[in-house]
Length: 177
Image (cartoon, rainbow, N blue to C red; front, side):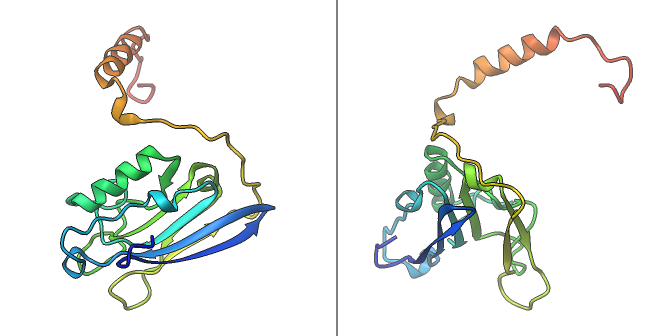
């Protein structure tokens, strides 16, 4: 993001013969940004990308607790792209506030080969996050697709799901159910 406020470092490398873009990003807290500052992840969302960093944003996709406007905006950016969040929202990356202002996202084709863990052995205001690459699996090349969940017919989905589930035979035990 070249906006004069956010900082990022972009590195391009090859893994398993595929060119990979790794982006480390820092977006200051709102209190340290110019008035009416907004940022977007969209310029960084390209095929075969891993984006990691402290974005000082919260959303249920990566952090338990209260969603904030910046986190909602980033979630919309991801929803419009072909990206997934690697974070486990139940595991905080910032121990002092039990929250996760840090995010790790990857293109869907790349995410299948990545692991995400928090290293909580260091004494810091943010836990280090380790991203691992499964060297035994080939990074799959998926056709670019787009799913806009905001345009989904959720009520129709619920009705159809209820209809299909009601047609299933009742389980004969709790474990079968």
